[in-house]
Length: 369
Image 1: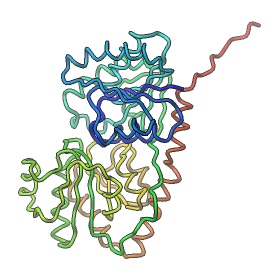
Image 2: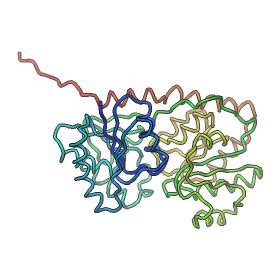
Image 3: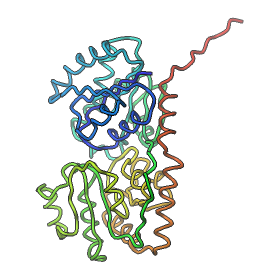
């Protein structure tokens, strides 16, 4: 099967980009990836390894999104894929329109990657794409959600399709032996600087924890998470968190190194679908402290800590509880976290689910009596 994956952007290392990368790297289907905007160098290995052909459309404006419909339709005619999979709202709209413009026979599937726990955290641009996606949702041949929470909330919002299913993210087993610290002292956080990630809550919680545990250190990675970001410096000043306490690394290419270096992962998001970084950290044996968004509570299970969103005091308490763990209890949680991901969220299981979802479904034929 030749699948054309249309995604809004491949410039970051977010959940959608990383899941798509794992899917085409470990799957057997022929893959073409079409980022509407652009592709970062970190993803070019997919092409050099032969896992996929990448054809970025270089969209830079709203008018460019309209033009992308015609460009993509011509590419579909030229590539002749067996199916089109559209990742994220903008790609769902462009992919749906382009596929129908190009052909009435190629099935087009949608891939929704976030929940709607807190709609106020979405930008106006995302709100507009969400509303249009709702109107078009019946026209897709099927819709994948990466969490049960995302499916329920989108259905309540008005998404309607006869073929909707939940396929959680899949992960590759972390290579080599996982080194578990005797006592947790480094807490990491990964995600772009965006209001959905609720970094004000994280920085307030981190400052509270630092006052109780002066030796604790934090590592933050993601787009905009740098010391030259004025908004970050303002949050540090507001909460009295010394610069030397948190290592702001911005975008990084070696996430494996990040997961190995930290002792636990924090997630302060206001909304998520399937929290990719939580499961990735757990696959490296690092317990998670997460807000109760999307399917985070189920992903973490009894291997970490779940707190309400936008509650810095609760997030700080959970961090302190983890830092207070005995060596034995911390090692138990670390081992349980890794085993939970291996058991529930293997990439092989996800690949099979995607293949089954996109496979043609038998048509029921009525028998005359």
